[in-house]
Image (cartoon, rainbow, N blue to C red):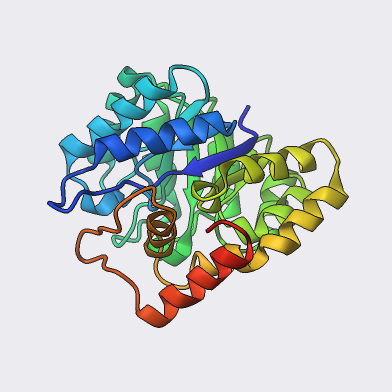
Length: 288
């Protein structure tokens, strides 16, 4: 079962553009010490499009090794090529990941039948699959009817729901037994109110402990505490997306002194006015 807070962890880079594994392992330890339920490496937030295959595999290996069973690891191994996704997923399976996050194939815009065959082939490898439905990034939605078909596969266990629609999440929850995880921090409370089990979170890079408490409060029925947290941090949830993810969250972590603010092109730093706005929000919420 997948429930609670799963951090879509950033991939820090050094000034020479290499992966800063020292900073990365410190981030992992910080997440585990805060009690997160899981870590999700090399998803969109982990800049999967800008790391090469060797780096991608090494990142997953290091997260699994560092977690050492203390939290779940859902490895981002999706691609718009089924062959590539199979290769990355098999590596994650052998490395000891608990599950794979499979983004909808992007740019080539497969049909619903193509999506069904793609995800089914990956699930056949035996590593539990979390479908990642994010049409804003991929230009193709996994339709609810397709998700219902996929839910019959024993290897497909959950959905990261990032369509921005509570209705879509509600339909998936009503028609399947899949664990639904919010893909948007600002919608976590709303989606959990209709039956989602938690969140794959960007904000938990910054606030791992409080985000974990938040989702656990909802799961325990502590709605007043959860609503209070949501309202106090709603601006933060939004401001972590004032530019393309993961630019703002990496800027925030740099302001906190946890990583260097380094990106790989075509990702680059955001404008100073946006950075000032984010800094003000981080200050108001007591983060910096």
